[in-house]
Image (tube, helix red, strand yellow):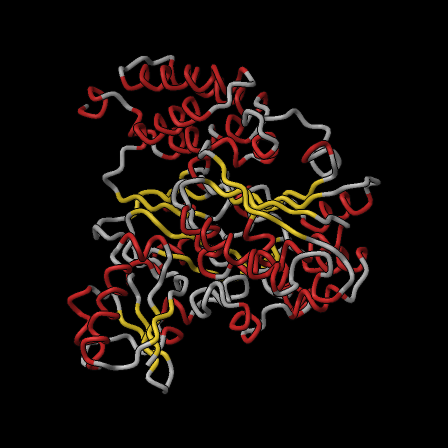
Length: 505
């Protein structure tokens, strides 16, 4: 009997380690042969710890499982969910980037290869650098970290730059509230990220890569380090990548947890051992990045999507999506919802479908008031925008942004003025301090929102003007995008910005 118990941080926070220990103890007591595999999460957080049992006839899912449930689990009398693939939340997904997450043993390279892994790298190894970049361009892949910049154009810029050294840097400093896709992938399928970075290295002519992971992700750091060591021993990394005669190696670097280090130039400064402050652009990192050399800086999901593009072909990936938003989006559903977790689907699903049908509405049972899309710098989308399709251009037209595709749901008890104030306060605390609109503007923003709450009739116009200044004058997205949650709250929920006296009237 083989039993799969997730090692994912969310599952461990909900007792997965205790469940694994109880299974081992109970199996030893009964004298039965049980192999425990610590896999990644299948992405259904409300069912964690989600344990799967394979008795030789396929994997059956149970969850949430507690240590007290273990005797019934081994007896086969515990009520389960059948196959994971048949659970509606999972069955409705289009899993490309996350196709192996939760299915494989995260640090078993043979298991990874048995489920389609390395096929993309082997194909890429037979291609020239320009051919690799052309394949990525044809797929329509855009950066999943938030900006949505076409990945192929970024790679082409680095590939065509003349330099002795070039680098691949993976931004795994996932600091947005309500987002966890990067962590989940690194914990559950680290070889897909390694494979994607190796393909990027072969494509642009880089021989060295770094994964910059925030220190708050200890499990992801440990899994990634072990996977890199395995890949190096097995010839996936090193001087002769899968027998291609071309070199690429990488290592894991740990950040100290500053939110602004999720911005690519701050990350590069931190990676170089400097203070994590934003650099002015130009020059772009693609031309003068890490140590002044041409550097591809891509997010975890962007790079981990590359292997499936080469495994199944750019045309296969490009066939999914909406408009210029091609492929799949990895929605991270959180907040006040019945069913939270990771949901991968083609671009084009409406926000209302994701919230009402996939997430099942609010856990409190109250009406949904707003959904913040794209992390703490994303706009609050009201119910009358629920028909907005999930696509970069569609969300931009509706006054929002997809960002890293985190959805945080609030019911009708949420106070939007307090949430707007939190956005300004967050910016003030996390600002690197380099530019005035962000450093000073966020502090003045908190004060101005407090004036609105106190009943100052002139403060709303002042807040609007301040947000315009921050949006246009900030060096990076921290100051530039903070106006999105603030102004969307002010615009769509004006009643929450009325004074107590006005509300009573």
